[in-house]
Length: 84
Image 1 (tube, one colour):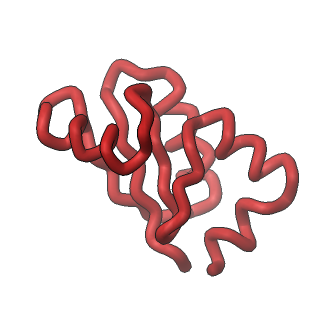
Image 2: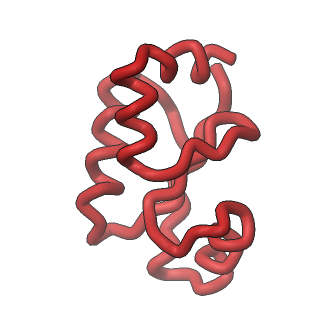
């Protein structure tokens, strides 16, 4: 199983939706709360080129946000990506 990292804030509905999908699949992930850490938010922006949350990585692959995660799921591509 590929490691999953998700940058979030506690008040973001899209973050909760992305985590619900991962939780429903039984996927363990590292959650990084950028609301409480300007350093972590800067890290996320440098890695992704984006300012919005969530930002999700599966292994070394930047998936993007919630919409992209759900699109991978609908296309049947998320499970193979998670499996590596």
